[in-house]
Length: 314
Image 1: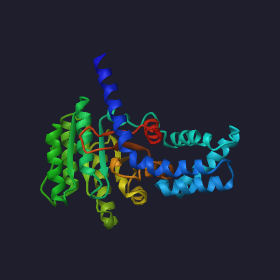
Image 2: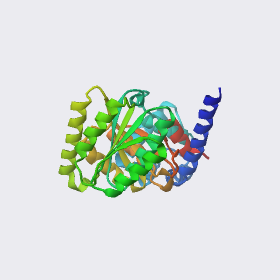
Image 3: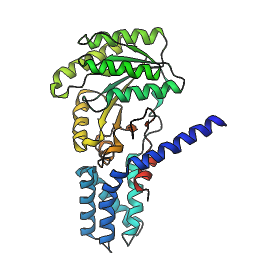
Image 4: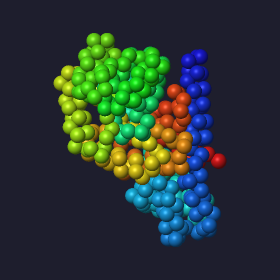
């Protein structure tokens, strides 16, 4: 079956990119972990302390590192592991478990959905929207984009460029126009043209939290009033190169919006990819998409097995 072969080829290609893209993160996490494993011959309190320290330094964060060490202790006891070599395998399994996603995470792509994309300026929000639009257009979906980040002229132009590249319709107005009005128009267009996905860009000025809250609340209100039957998806875009700062942003946005998933960009340029583990573990928000390159196909659905396997790839 040529299409299945094509899909398999793409998947293998992306796994290769993932392995390559996670090189810095892999060196950061496993460099510290392997150093601890080779420095100790027996598993004792000092060993666990050093291992916890190595995970914290690798951007997994204090809480996540503590959770991992706690679980490792139990599994080491359960499996009667006596030497540190056996711990590496357990750590890999533990990370897979922590990162495991539900099976229904991408159901929204099979329904009539409105996807709100939020995040601070500069994290790769507009690029993410363009790549998602392209991806779902390729899968035969009818996609419409809404340029509701109206305060940044560059955002509207950038989105127009992406809509041309992906071959999808863009609903936009003049710079500084009301974002709610853009979303209203876009919802009417999505209904009239029976679009599968309406993806909306939104403003990202987190330092002005109150205004941002009001704006998002207004947009939600319009979508709920005008298109109650649509599935609502809220994707928060985070720049993985910012490490712990990305986790703080996620916490702040979680106060403002009901986030259904995280998009982690720029994983190929950072040693701080361990933040993916921290975000999912601490905030209980699934990572749904990851970006490991500049290309239009370099953003894919997140797969915990692949992610952890790529991290531990020799």
